[in-house]
Length: 427
Image (cartoon, rainbow, N blue to C red; front, side, top):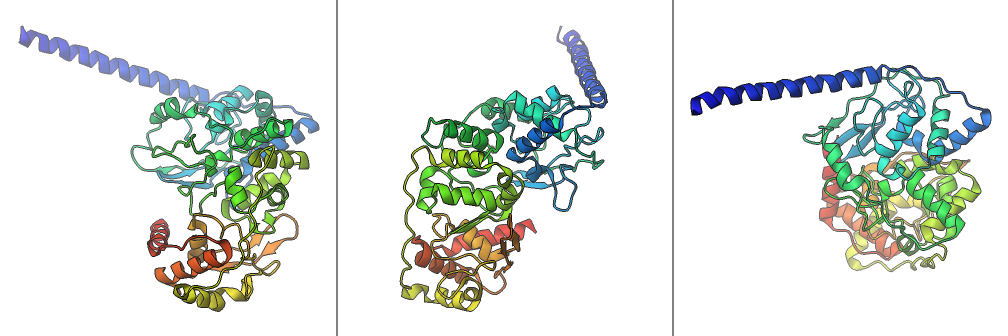
């Protein structure tokens, strides 16, 4: 009986494999014909296009989907993650590589559900977990605007992800676990400005995607929204909760100026945040900027802490003071007062008042490029000192800066070594 059963089970297994193969072929065919759907033609009035452009700016579309030196919205920008590099896709109306065959429904499904027109799942680097909150009318307006842009026949770049994160079907499980988990509001409020600011910050602007800590599977930690994240890119995204902002001296006027121009009295935007300001928040009207600051700080903002008075130099940090005078004072001033259009002030500097020294250490190691802000503000480039200073030197310089101007704890040499090693590994 056993010998007769084996062929029967063998035939059943063969039929099962054949059915699975046929089903995969059907799915592949469905995707192929879906991908080859009709090219869409979208009519829109100038007013509708202007409204869609405003919403696309608020949603930060250009900052992610435009590579440096590339055509607007043509994709190719590398997005670093702990799992590898993901490249932003082409969202011009090109029918082969972009969204030229997408309907408004297809586009909304991509925004709100992370599903491409042919059915494949997008990676969560596309912030669909935040865009799930987007109003359908706003999605349609953005779609209408994008479909009026020049089509660019730029092929999408292949992602560089490690196994098993390069297996797209696994994202469905990720979605079941995490995509519908909405973080609570980070501030207290009920005003119409607060409500509008929450929509701009959490849905369109998706601030939490960068500024919230993430779990080991890349999910946003909804228990600590906007509390800062140092796992995406070279620079960390700081804590922008009301308490975190107030502890570094931010008030409504300073925050609004920063979002409008990239410059405040005690901070300048750098790296990815400078792109956000340039391509997104600087283009918002004053009412919406005020609404965002209202949400980030709350209807009743906490009082900003005054900057600490410059502290005397402890004997152990005297080498840090000497490094500052030799390498930094020429641009930042002998006592940290800064020089307009050259270098920001150290006194009261928001970055020096941050509990996390990550960005300060990275700036000393790597340097910073020249900054072109909205309007006429400029900052010259800052050289990196990784070749001139060893880990101990950078630790003592960073510690002196933080203690003298920020009232913060010293920096461990091991923290410098780790960030130096991370940078070497990325080259």
